[in-house]
Length: 71
Image 1 (tube, rainbow, N blue to C red):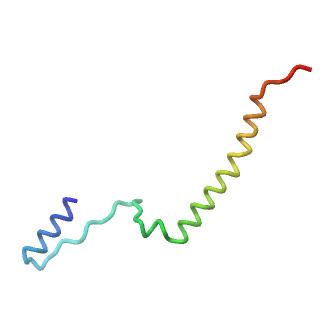
Image 2 (cartoon, rainbow, N blue to C red; image 1 turned 90 degrees about the horizontal axis):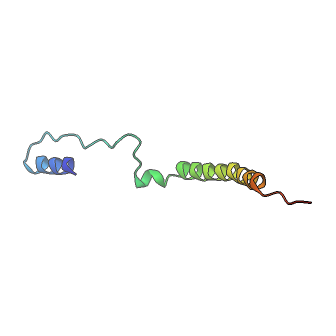
């Protein structure tokens, strides 16, 4: 926020040499980046892959922790 204020005040002072706009943090995603088809499809594929991996693990845990019934 402070860099935006500094940028605005510099522009209002009439100085023709404006500082460059602030560089976004690396790895920070903007709303437009989140809506790109590449990123959306990757998120869907990763979620589906996580489900495919997690469901058999949960079934295995349920089977192994189930109390055995006496005959």
